[in-house]
Length: 456
Image (tube, rainbow, N blue to C red):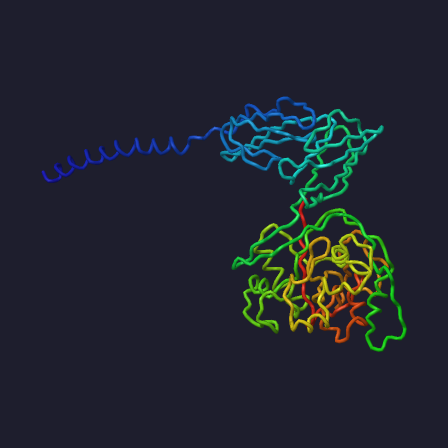
């Protein structure tokens, strides 16, 4: 009796378990085996497919079953979203939809008729540019703002941008001249007018000011080479001018920025976090002058570029330094040929001691024509390796760097403390062509004026 009771109880229990478990197994099987739909692309086309340069077309996008990415736009676009296109040149577009381990691809093309889209950027509202476009068969057109030139025949076109005046401030273009070969499609030329000045805020709200140096060309080297033979000293300062030869033309296709002042103790400490040394003065607005070439690169430039991602703070080339110093002048000194005006622009042995200044602050003397102060307060590093003359020097203003690099770098400017005699020394040191070679370590008299490249 106990057996039958046990048997009778156990069978229904087993049957109940099976009846509950079986549907669950069937449910799990059904869910695990289901397959999501593969991606499909129902529409991907440009409407209209052909436009004039500067006109807008629409990219129609429709798909299911995944995520769609469009190249060369480099972006993910949801289905059903129209994308506005204002292309200057004929372009092929690709839609890639990925989902459920599958990929579908579609292509569409936009054809742009021959023409030139000249895009003017950077000028405030109400200020017109002065851009001249010339091309084949005597074509000439003057533009004052962004404009699309349609229906142009194939050939080479030149776009010249002029300086414009904003009140008393000149606004220089990034590039004076650009050339483009026009074929069977359109082309884009950007005419940019960078800001005449820039200010960056370092940690502690410390200002770092830059002045725009315009594109252009100049003659590099001494205007009047002094080659006396009766100099009483071992290092003849006139040699540093004599070795700035041969006089040669350098062309700058693009504008760049140069710091308004040499780097000061305040700026150095803001970037590096250093609290010592105090550089022989407790005044934070004196130029830093005793850091070697590697210290500037590793301790200052590297962290500065991390503070401002996307910027390129660097040492200027020797040609950039002299071009910026001269500021369009063609005289022996950047202010003219009369040495006696030096007190207005530069610190010398005489004028520092006359006013009781041991280490002058930056910005106390008048700037040059482009707004740069204290070009001769100290010797300033450039990126160039030192060469005893300019034979073989770049003509585009880029740094002259050897491979492998030697231990000497080119420095420009001069320091007032070098001269413990008046005019007989400083008339050489303040020459716009004055240059010298300095071993990169140690360098107890050498500071830095920052350069900043401008991206296209």
